[in-house]
Length: 229
Length: 363
Image (cartoon, rainbow over all chains, first blue to last red; front, side, top):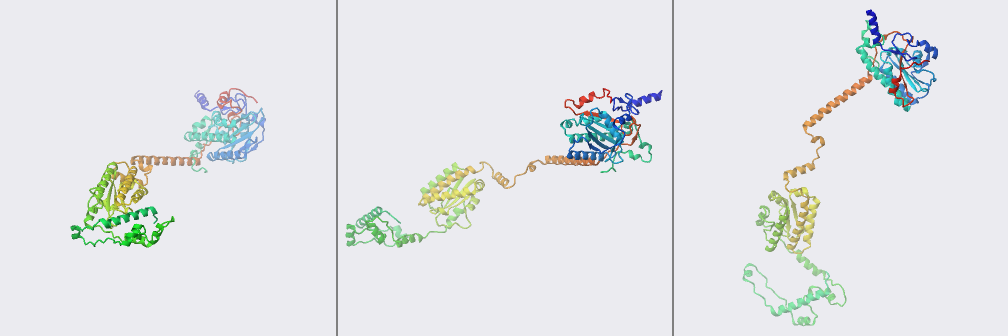
């Protein structure tokens, strides 16, 4: 009885996850959406099983000028300097009208092979901004490592800051704002994670790996004195 | 020298009549006893005329005094032609030589130097040698007293003879320095009677500071010119004093307001010569210290902010390594974040956020 109550309490503390298809919330660790039964296999069935090779800035739709692309790449590089574990991918395409942007982003981040991202940064540590110029929408998808730090509300707030620039067609400005706001958000949560990492991880149903590694406890120190400049 | 014929004829006729009257009526007067005792006079001899001259003068062929004109001038005088009368050069030189040869005293007697240079002036015209008549002296003093009543700049005139030399140690400035230091604003003039061009002038210090050099020199120049328009010495002095008085009135307007102490004026002159203090120099020391403290603090804060920013730029952020179960059977990512539509400005993010998650969307 006690263990059942503890389990229920733990579930209440967990941060909900949104299903990319039915957009209903469910608690983590579900192998399929409890509302619609959606799994990654369903996404693969729609978008394909083969790995997709993309760069971290893929402007398939061609909305960015050369100068804008350079500016955005600099922002992406700077993001990676500040967050050595993460990367920020941007994918711009004119999708078919019946394509759900959430599902596409979910599939792409799992399926993509980012050719200009070093191997140490797996897709688990990636943030993917997907822009559909057909429906004029953009959405954010993130890997497992970022589940404790990003969710739908926070990512929507980040995207909202670029709404004005997007309306005016200032793509470089919009993308720059999104990357900067994401950096600020993650910086804040990084400091919180330094103080109490277990609580944040627990909310996402994750647990700290370093605690079990008795030989290198200092790895959990988020202060990055030896980090690359 | 050119004279009109009618004037010369009139003059010569008058001299002829006077000559004849003197010959007939006047007897030589005896010298007075005083002259006999004090001076050795030469015996006075009157010109004599003979009968021929008398006859010639009567019939008009001889004009008394005409010999002074020279032969050529006389011929021109009686000529029927209207031509200029030119006197002989030799006769004119005789007259000029007599002027130049006239000897003038050049040194001031010792009995007068004390009054000039060793005593304070007791009147506006200092004339111990009695160069002016009593009447002229009273007139000039009266005028200068009236000027002193009307003007803040008093004018003192030291009178010397035309060719008298001022002792080398003395000057209007030395007199001003020795006797007029406490008398306010004055102008001291060393005036040589009959020689206004030799005039020396000194002003007190406040006039020097208040009036430009050009104006001061102009006043002296104009006064000398005014004196030069007259021929007689006393009249020249009168014209000089009147013009100088007028110029001093003009100078008075340029002087600083009356009542300012010499110390203040000295400070004013010093302040004008020195560079004006800067705004920083005017600020009191306490305020300066406050400013310095605030400035230093601001500088430190600015440096701190810059250092913090520099460190922030170099700072990197890491996240703890974690592990957890896979979601929706996805290998890398199950984090589905927000989706924003930028299709219309009428559909702001706040509205989109409220609507999201309330419907089931199937593929």
